[in-house]
Amino acid sequence: MKYDRNRNEDFLTLVHTGDEYDKYLHAVVPPVFLNSLHVYDSIEAYHGADMFSDDDFIYGRVSNPTVHILERKIAELEHGSRALAFASGMAAFSSAIMATCQTGSHVICMKDVYMPVKRMFDAVFGPKLHMTLSFVTGNDLKEIEDAVQENTDLMILESPASFTFRVVDLKAIARLAHEKGFKTYMDNTCLTPIFQKPLDLGIDISMHTMSKYIGGHSDIIGGVLVSKDEELMRTIMTQSREFFGGILGPMEAWLAIRGLRTLDVRMQRFCETGTAVAGYLEKHEKVKQVHYTGLASHPQADIIARQQKGHSSLLSFELDTKDPEAAVAFVNRLRLFGKGCSWGGHESLASLPFYKETESALSLIQGNRGLIRIYCGLEGCDNLMADLDQSFKHL
Ligand SMILES: *Cc1c(COP(=O)(O)O)cnc(C)c1O
Image 1 (cartoon, helix red, strand yellow):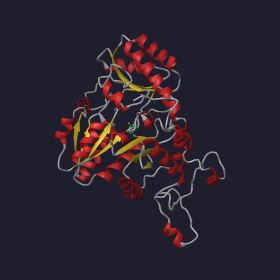
Image 2 (image 1 turned 90 degrees about the horizontal axis):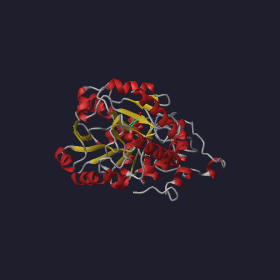
Image 3 (image 1 turned 120 degrees about the vertical axis):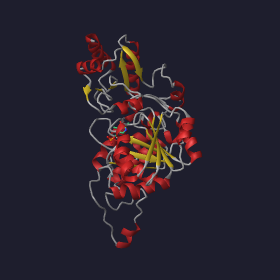
Image 4 (image 1 turned 135 degrees about the vertical axis):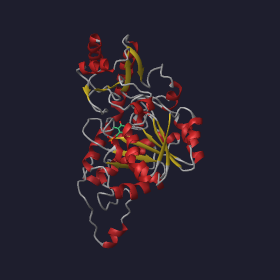
């Protein structure tokens, strides 16, 4: 798939969906609705309000007009029928689990998904709801088929995975899931809908953590679920979100809408910078291996070419030494890259995601403690490469 900067179907959604000038006193930007409730002229009108429509609102824990504008944009971008925004990515994830699984459900999970997802099974879904989990690499349909049990309700996917940058064939997995009767949940945070649309490949639920590229300025926490399955989304809205109460705040929604207006331009720049920095690292004599979906040397380049339109500015690499302390020293000497865990904002970051992991977590993902993950922000790729260069000189 090819990204075409001049003919992007997403432009009008990013820039204009939700701009209903006559509804908002001709304000060029829709307001933040900070009200907790909406009042009606009569009891009949109040009870007649339809919380699934674009115009009726009752109470802020159920829905909010600013949050709804964001949800309409995300639904359009992902080609879903409806999106629902939550107070964090994990709130969105746990709501998706509650809507698709039940006590005793079996879930198939890719080994290298976001780590708190796996920890939540160990801490909550396993002990409290007697749910079981089977890990797969996701690379082999036979492996997934073998993992399916009578009570398999869901498969959790992340492609590319945000530490190892392995990908899976989303279309093939979605087809298998529909055949076998379980749903698929996919974390699409890394590529955003600009570069990948999992629902079009048959995935049931796509999730975005909005503190990353969508927010884009390291100033909000939020998550969103989107699906083509209207019934499923109504269930999530009226059960998971309304009762657990994890709706996104209106101010955060307003900031996410603001982030979306420039998402396409930022993603183009992130893709260029990520590709340049990955190429620089791959050629460096002190680097053993670079993990990045935009490299021709990626072992799954064929799948990537089929399902991705572009690449993020997030990548990981291994130094040509087995000593994790060398990686720590390398990262500590970087000046432009802050040492921190998140990504997707304006500022570059570096971390050692597996440095403190347990042996069993490491063996599950075949990761090593010295793996360095960098997020390239908007400081410009020459500046970032110069910073990496000065730290390499000390190695
Ligand atoms: C940050 C992140 C999450 C978690 O999102 P929160 O908003 O912190 O709950 C989930 N998946 C990926 C890929 C992430 O990077």
